[in-house]
Length: 572
Image (spheres, rainbow, N blue to C red):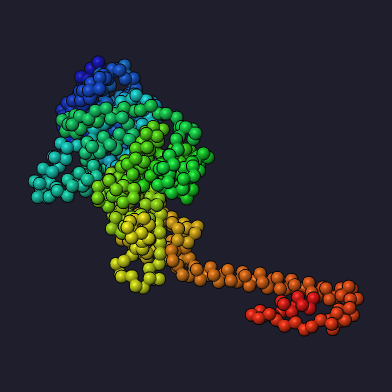
């Protein structure tokens, strides 16, 4: 163990950034306590710090933990990263042998894959929203070796309890934020004491439930232990392990869902579930948007299986569906290919596919805000009634990253062609027993609804056949006028029951028939002209005259015209 006597101390301003106070004694004392807490966390899984060789201090600041940890483990190699270059500059001058890297607020880290076997992180994920956290969780998975241990703190029940006390003392009701934390599993507060502070705008206050960490962070790592108040008797510690990083399975090794499940989701041909070329599943969506995919209505894994084969495989995939047996099949057969692909049961009622589920027709998505760069909802809104559709559009916006894309499909009709419909009636149905069998929405209602929710149409793919599903790509923001037109007058021909289409279609077909008849008639006239001009026609003229004198006159058959075409044949 290296002596820490007479160790240099950082300036008070740097101490306050990492310790919450400029008290130098607490800075030194808390550093020793954190080393003790990390050792205790490792002991819960039967490990000791001395067993590790390359250790990363993720968010090392000015060395509150890094310096005493390095002194306790002189045999290990240490690296430290932080966004605070001022803190690292001071640390470099005092400890020139340390590997210190200034990093950006978002990945990547300047290290190769599988570099570290131990990572500890105190009070970093307590200041990032879910979008930042997911990016860093994926990056930490990349730079840690299989079997590596990660010890990460988060603001759990104790920290949130202190927040509630503060709000109550200030005369502010904490019930709304408590309800949000209970519902979402996360609570990000941007209007806090870090506002206009020394750190970037993204750096604020974040709280988690233990259940969320278990479920959500468990999609990146294996959760080995949860230690309430395990870090400085305030923040919680979670101990995680990096799982073996299996190579991408070849297409033939990924199972196809059974026929009984494929029948539930539409086409049964295996080609609709296959992506042997590894191309982008949705060519309209750029590669970077596949980083984190939420598949609303994943079914038996049609899209998931293709994404597993895609060369640009998502860092994270979450698929939800109401059909429990299909979700279980996905877990057993697709999650085993890549554990980052997670499948969850969405417990809402459907008469045909989920009659045993709870009787509700809506449930919030079991993920945090702005977590996903791509939300896919194929053939889902085509089977959801209006109140639930509005709620789910709100959920799509909630989980969509700032630059994320939502791919949705819909049946549309033009309500103006149904003047007997009431003002609040915006749907058509095809099945009186189960209206969700197919739900067709008024296009103008759709445009008004997404505008009210703060969503924008960025691209529209009309159906190949009128009345089939439209593909509508959404982002956050206001819809541009030119794009909005794709769902109005210019696209009316593809709407269900659109009279302009059928009128145009029949007129086109009739014109084609007339053109073909005219072509045949002109060809026949030209043929007759050539015949009359021929030598044989002139030579046989006397014989035709004698023959005609002996034939009785012909009368047209009843109901048949003696028009030009018939006269020409007789003359010939």
